[in-house]
Length: 179
Image (cartoon, rainbow, N blue to C red; front, side, top):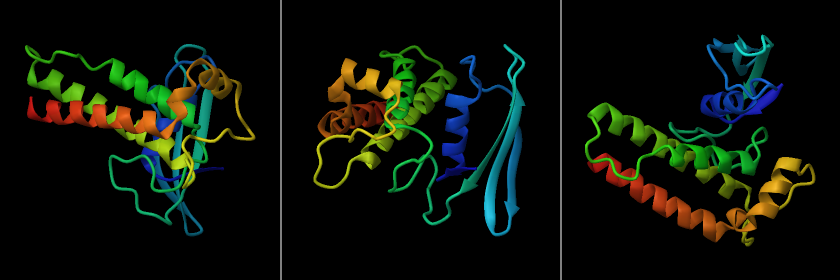
């Protein structure tokens, strides 16, 4: 069973990993459950592209309260790798228009939600950086995707770069809140 730090982390995991055909999750059924003092997030669904079905059970780590919209607390994820958080952040930020003048209030709200997602995902790789270190360390279970991400842009894993992007994204989020 997968250990999630929050419901949001479980849902993000499903967005990233629902189907091997790379189709994002669609129409999942599920919710919360409890077994022997363990809170569970349970979801199942079917891929409309290839027909594969999936059932995912996540035990919720209740040792730390994670306020919405955060994905996790002070401990790093056990189910989502740093490069996946970076990719999710990049994707969300890239879908926010640079110029929001002329957008409807609904479009601005959608842009604000995307930027909020970019910020919360980008906060997560910092949890992997041990005190006194300057970058996300390589993991023993380093995936091919992480190796490729590191070799293509190693600076993205440095604390300084992550912090600079966070400042920029938070500023954009603040400007969207004022729009």
